Amino acid sequence: MCGIVAVSGTSEAAKLVYLGMYALQHRGQEAAGITAYDRKTGVAHRHRAPGLVSEGFNEEVLAGLPGDVALGHIRYSTAGGAGLKNSQPIRVGYREGQLALVHNGNLTNANELRSRLVNEGALFQSSIDSETIVHLIARSPRGGVEAQIDDALSQLTGAFSVLITVNDTLYAARDPFGYRPLVIGHLPAGGVVVASESCALDIMGARFVRDVEPGEVLRIQGTEMTSLRPLRPEGEPQPCIFELVYFARPDTHLWGYSVDRARRVFGRRLADEHPADADIVISVPDSANSAALGYAEQSGIPFELGLIRNHYVGRTFIEPSQAGRDFKVRMKYNAVREILAGKRVVVVDDSLVRGTTSRGLVNMLREAGAKEVHFRLASPPVRHPCFYGIDMPTREELIAANRTPDEIAAYLGVDSLGYLSQEGMLDGVSGAGSFCTACFSGDYRAPLVDQERGYAMSSHC
Image (cartoon, rainbow, N blue to C red; front, side, top):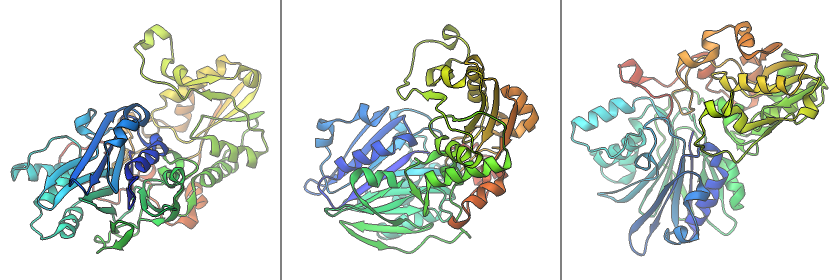
């Protein structure tokens, strides 16, 4: 998960990065950070803060981040754990100047590389895999910034979309499989934007230009872009289909596809594969809204807002035992009794991971008077953990890895259960090329080096 954004070629770089981070807030809510390089002083100014962008940044903070190039990071911790020491951007001084880095993805050989670097004398300040990239750049024996970046990135396996600034030059790169997204835009008054999703371009008024290609390394100086030597090819690109299923914002365009349109197609195919004799279709908001609309359109069953999501849920000191059963679900959702009472309901969700939240939702729908509950998932069963950058638990915790569909239906307490088939999902986005489906199929294309060599692997970066 995590979101990254950079702006080059404008004196408003940090302020624009700040706007882009707002648009990417769905990619992480644990911490946010910006680094900006000031050519006048030769200083890379940085500010990091826990929580949401709105909680950590204000006008005074942004005024302390001058410069024509800046990059930002939205963190969702998995590898490395929580705490500001593990937040990004990473900022260091090295022999070629002031370097800052942000990373989205998960390196599958991070622990092997880290062990080697520690044995060579490297001193790590954090426990995140992203810091490994900085050490590889700094310790590269090659001459010149670009050769050192190339040397470092060529040693990585797994998923990485990275943005790096060295003084006032910005570099952007994606791993050869292209697991995590990265897009390029042009600002109307001049300037270049690189971000995880196109919705970050929209909030700045930037025009989408293209994706950073899998294996591509870009140099951006001011507003001039140059594509450098590509990283070694790894075969056909494998962007993560779970971005289209769940993670990306519906107003984003990824790999030539509208996320909203893709999810509607998934919903329509789900209706064909698993029809239901029902009165209404509802979604589990917000990520399943588009798929539920597609299901309703294809089935002819009316779509209703049967569940309302609270968007302002924060941390609480109240324990679940004090608040009753399904505490976390009730904090986040509420059922609309007037819509649900006496109705046969199709509930569309994007995916099913552990099943605990869905079980609580079904209880809530029953309490609101739903006569029947038919659960539909707009993706195949999640049977394998993701090692490429989506936070998923161990195989033991994945409900579909350990139970049959009938057993899952009984656990959830639903009248019927239906998953979109992998064939139906892939056929729905066939024009966008090949995708990584490892969480559904167990087909891990990038080597799981740390796991194969006995290192403990985290499920996400």
